[in-house]
Length: 459
Image (cartoon, rainbow, N blue to C red; front, side, top):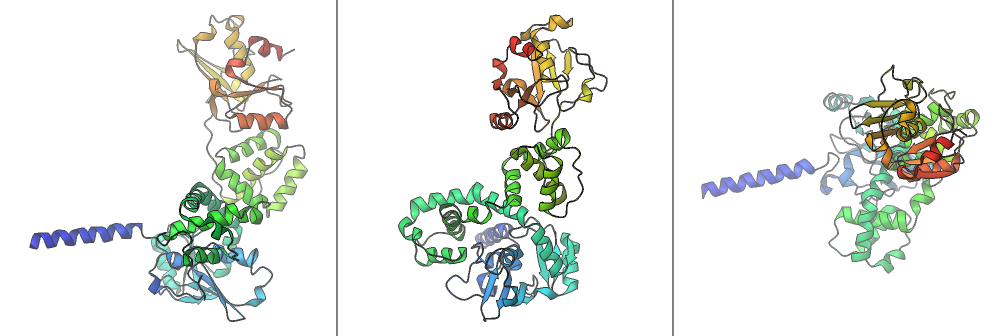
């Protein structure tokens, strides 16, 4: 009996420990959370619909002159309402801005609080966490344990505002990669679609509360599932995200950088290839950078301008760029076709390795194909079947690429070290976009390239 009791106790302790491991730092029980809003939607952030007690330790709020309050899951949502939506140009209607003190869990005057910004503790709706404390000693203790820097409210708000586009792209990426799909599935299988489509809600929090209160998707949905349904309806079916941010160029650049891992690398390559005179100084605003690109590189096509803007702006804002994997060229290596030093042209390098282990480097894809087709003309006794490894350099990312999987643009207005080139791309989409922008005549695969075509480029 005693052994059974001990075993049960151990199981209970393990279960609690496991549950605590998955509990977010921001979360508190509903009974410990102060809700300043009134009405059926008081549990939810009006701006994003998230459950306020679940993200309580980053909660912010405004008390308005009319006696009402609006409570947010994070300083991100506070910034969005104050700068873009409900409270834009209405700051004079705000009586007080409040934030939750992490230690006491009480709302305090945000402008007197001490914020720890950038700690290792995950934040809410932002890649840079921001936690507030009433006492400076509490903020310092948190900083010493978790890193970050102690800031004032004004400093934390400015950082949140500067990071807003980047954080919005992160939020969209999370929603589109998971939440929309989950929401669509639940909407189609469990929900009263007709009733949901008739909801007239002014905020995401209001829509979420109506779906829950009226059991429009049943009574057994967990908060995360309810959030997913609301996001799918609000952002996708009602197209609210696109209407709000679809024309915001900065946010769209961040979104593209998350969707396409090579987007920023393309921008760097464009800067190095055709717009090197544009200085990589820290531009004070997105508009300033855009104007500098228009002035310095006016002939760039739209896609390339966007990639260049993403790269240049990303250098200032900490956007992470995928590292390239270039073909490493020995410094004294000469192209077997033209005799030029290959290392001088890293953006165009091609490489082959023969079945006998012999390696050759080329200053461009055209010379590589010449050698493959007519090695004997360059004093080597090889046939096409002898080439075991064939690599080219992707035009946009400068990464090595299996030539047999590449797409080659022929006849474009962009020239390589030896004039007209076969310009390689990792994807057909990139090849098509480049061809449209730079007057390409054909897009070919490796097997479609013939000796007549290659040698004909020099005519």
